[in-house]
Image (tube, rainbow, N blue to C red; front, top):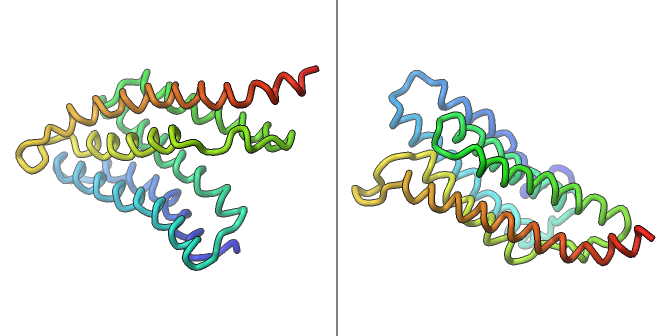
Amino acid sequence: MFWTIPTLMTWTRIVAIPLIVGVFYLNFAPAERNLIATVMFVVFAATDWLDGFLARKLNQTSSFGAFLDPVADKFLVCASLLVLVHLQRADVFVALIIIGREIAISALREWMAIIGATKSVAVHMLGKVKTMVQMIAIPFLLFDGTLFGVINTHLWGTWLIWISAILTVWSMIYYLQKAIPEIRARAK
């Protein structure tokens, strides 16, 4: 189950990272670079939903796919955040919160898997909402202009990325609270 259609789609999110970053080095007008990067991010981010749907529909779920999917999401989000910080469209503090949480929760989940307590840190709706808000905020900030003549994407993206930072901390606290009983039980 290593080379299934859903797994290949997951790999595209990882392959997308240097492509999205590379767009900002092209000799195009800034608005064109922004549009290309935004479209690419939206298309690749959509594969997150599509690969899961296809894995279930085609009965091609696998433990490798379940491992790779969140890793690809985290790589795509973290790389995009670093680009946005570099372009001065996102605050470095927001990036540190989001990236730091991803590292901390990934480490927590790995440790919980080692001790056989993965259910206590299973994906929760709060984490899904956090991811959805990030996946809306990032393309708004990549676009960095006026959409349909009315939507100031920089303003909306800034609000949304801060909201996602708050949700990020909230979800981290949630997962840590779920893990604490297991941690205390093992620390004795």
